[in-house]
Each structure stands twice: as structure tokens, then as C-alpha cells.
Image (cartoon, rainbow, N blue to C red):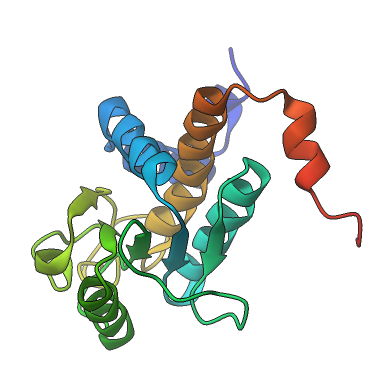
Length: 188
């Protein structure tokens, strides 16, 4: 019996919801995302709300892995253009800030990598790559029997997927773990 098998009912269901969301993104897709990030001159990320926390985590890990990664809206985020990748996440889709940033990225010549649970909602049509994470969001949570509210499964899955993507980036760069550690802040 594993620790997971001993989880109480709601906890086991919550872990199942997260596992299903993480598992909905094929390994080949994770490899392709890592390839796009590795090929980019610069990476900029943005997502609203709690998804934004997950993408800030991705920025931090990509920086540790040696990539030039930034979070949109921070005053240190440089302009994007040709050769850059803008990673946007909007689980439910159709949020004006994300749509506007996709438009800016496209006009500047950057590639757009879009993570969402609703691949038919804008700004998916403007993205160069759309990655569907199958999880409940506020776009489809009415009358739901899910344990995790609103878009929690999507948001938590995004945290896990960010590390799985970063692991692929680090493996491709073949740097020792000490290189990543050396890029970690000592101002904590």
C-alpha cells in the first residue's frame, strides 16, 4: 500500500484530479515545449491570478536552468520580438489581458505558446502552439462534482508541468545540478 492509497476520500479525489490534468499533456508535447524554449532568444511569461504564480515559478526555474526568462509586467521584463517566445496561460480563455498580450507578442514577431483548458477560446487562434491541459476551470465549473474548486486542478497541474518542462530543458543543456544551484539567489 502506498501513501496515496491511504489518503482520505477528498484528498484522494483531489490528487486524482491533478494527476488527470498533468497526464493529459503528452510527453511528446512536453518535449516540444522544451524545444521551443531552448530555441528562443528570450522567454517571457504571463498568466492571470493563481496561474500567474505557476508561471512565475516557470520563469524562476528556466532562469535557474540558464535561459533568459522574464515575467511580463515586471519592470525588468525586456521587449520581445523575433526569436522570442511568449508563454501565456489562461485556463478558461477569453481574458482581455491575455488576449492583449498575445496581440502585442504577435505584432512584435514573437512566437506565442498558449496553455489552456479551453483551446477553442481566444487567444488560441493567435498562438503558434496551443497546449491543452484537460482540467476544470471557471469556464466549466458550474454543477461540477470535482473536489477542487474553480480552476484549482488546472493551476496545480500547471505548477507540476512547469517543473516537468524545466527538467527537459536542464537535461538538454546537460549542465550539472550545481550550475542551476549557482543561479539561485542567496538573498533569502
